[in-house]
Length: 462
Image (cartoon, rainbow, N blue to C red; front, side, top):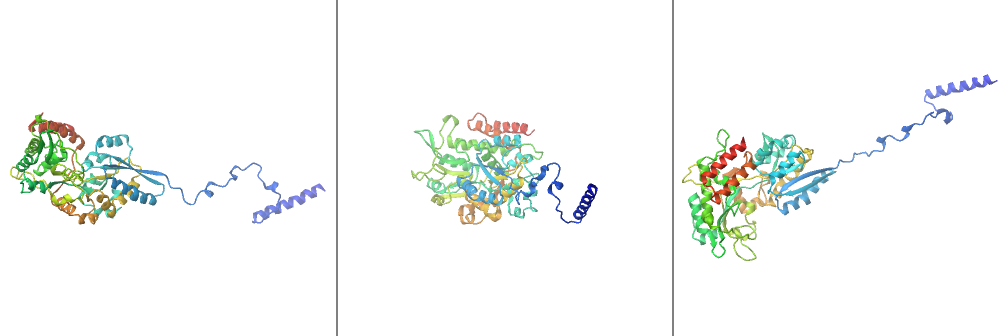
């Protein structure tokens, strides 16, 4: 009997297997089909619980800017950065504000550490100084990737190294000579901005006034970049270039032992002495006024003291100031009576934004640059500073509506000379400022100054 029962059960089992194989269902008790060991992977696979779209990675795009107006920074933080962050979920833009004081130490620290901001603010001459440490941005900003790059003017060359784009230029800021024509005419000077060295020295002697009670200047004929020393290295270069001077000889060595270099240095000493007198007189500097040195102080109604200013437009009065009715804008004319190769010059400076090679966010950096320096962006950025946009198609609105900017743009196009291609610019700046400092204190003669610069700069280039 038991054998018959086993036989019947065997038949049912075989039928069950056949039905299962055919896709049918079976009513076999759970305990006969349950696994004999626990199944640990009984939890749902991870992919069934993941969101349909991956969460964006949190990234901070760091930008380091130098000495911009509060209006510039406010515009970037209130308009550009929010728009960029909205278009790039998970990305936060962080702007750090620095100054041009000690910039070389700051930037050298970034590159030495191999980490720092994704975008850094550089000056015209710094493409050669830092070029090897900057990223090749052609894949992100070249014409094939971004056709708008063709809208940038000559300033783009300052943002290149070894033929490759390293970032984008913001503006062109040439150095002009701004003069108060009302003060000049009142003092009997009717020939306009001086046009050679002898005229400038005569002008400085006539229009620099020292208050005998304080033994300090109350009026300074010419403020060339730095009012106190009158011996800034960039001012020296502008004068040097106006004589037709070349910074390097054909073999690439420095050219500070040239006649143009000696004449430039002698001119700086002559202007300093015509303004302050001999170093032994220890005349005090022009007091600090409110606004530009060639403007008028609204609180006192008195002029701030300078008759002429050799600087970029940002150091001149704001364009809506009434004083512009009495201000001329000219290039620096050189010294054609003594140097026939002299030419009118406005020395062009171009601030630009570079992407270091160490950046891990090159595509994001390029995207931010494209937004901030779009046609509209470059126009707005430069409007906050009163400077000429680097993009040709951005030169509309405030540029053409302003008589001052229109004049500046015309002079830049006709007489512009780039401030770029300077080898070891930070070292040259230090060398020149040290030597020129000894010139105005009369510790060294002009001949000794140029010899000192020639030797020390040659050593630095080695």
